[in-house]
Length: 225
Image (tube, rainbow, N blue to C red; front, side, top):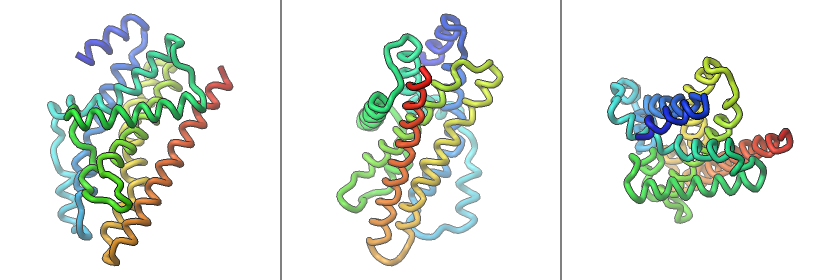
């Protein structure tokens, strides 16, 4: 259904961005087994388990289900932007991020998406819900994709494809791999709960930094307009 809508928008707007975005969402599932393995670790892993997590074959049918939760909210903002119903800016960007977090929580609550990798963490310090952290991280991926889609929507088709197709993998690596690294490492350290607390605070700080960078990008777009 979503691919049908994307193709219709392609014909209406002469813009293949929507199809490219959905394909990119499917390709992003290539690393899902690795992220799930990483966030389910309880002890320092072996090389064999790492290789096994990377050797999981790509499931095309499952990737359809996973293609849209991170990309669709961003594409909705792109459509609103093209019809002048949404304008980039500091406040509109932050409000959009809050909406993305809410949507990710709703998707998870209604079972519309497979659980994001951080939801596998279990109990977290300070009473933070793993599902909330997963929503924050997924929403940050969507927020970054939204900025990327808005900035490349006037590119030539080959340039647009080259820019969009790797984007979910790149943002997933930054959010789940880099921003989530302190939390994952904190879980593996044997010195009690303090490393986990510090790791969670660092992960939240890195997420906030990513959101601030993307929001500043939207703010610059507003000035250009």
